[in-house]
Amino acid sequence: MRKEFVMRGKTASSGTEVLNFSGFKPGMAYRMTEFEIYPSEGIATTNQELAAAVTAAKTAEDPSNPNFNNEGLIATALMTMTSGPNDSWNRWGCINDTFLITQNLILSVVDTQAGAPAPVNWQCRFESVKMSGPEEAVTNYKQFAISDE
Image (cartoon, rainbow, N blue to C red; front, side):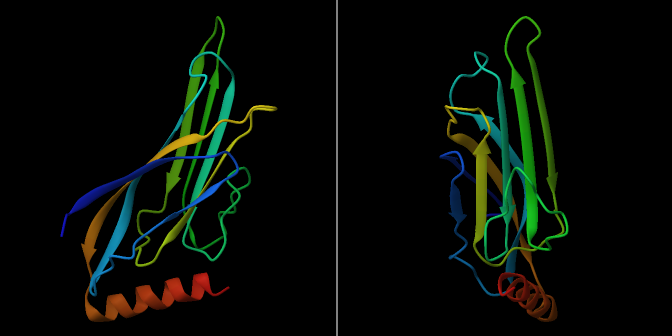
């Protein structure tokens, strides 16, 4: 099994994607170590505000209003870009890298540009983690409880 791997894609604004972990093997989990978003159109020519969230919960998290009380929230990212004489790019992100993943995740994105929201490019990096029997039982129960709410 690979120690580290990347999932990446481009998702329509206000859309969701399922990050599929169907190749799950007993005793193994995954930890998210990186989550990045990047514009797909109008780079350095328009003002943009992009947001994204990744959750293990039953429904997608609103990337524009992430709830950090949601136990299933694994990662959020925000990127702002202004064009013109004072160009600026700002990026913020938060990852719960202690969350062990054993099920599919939901990624949600939004481009808040009025009138012409563009798709959002994203990339997640994961590493595999070997779990003991009791650790696997606790992790699976936790994720079942989160996704069953």
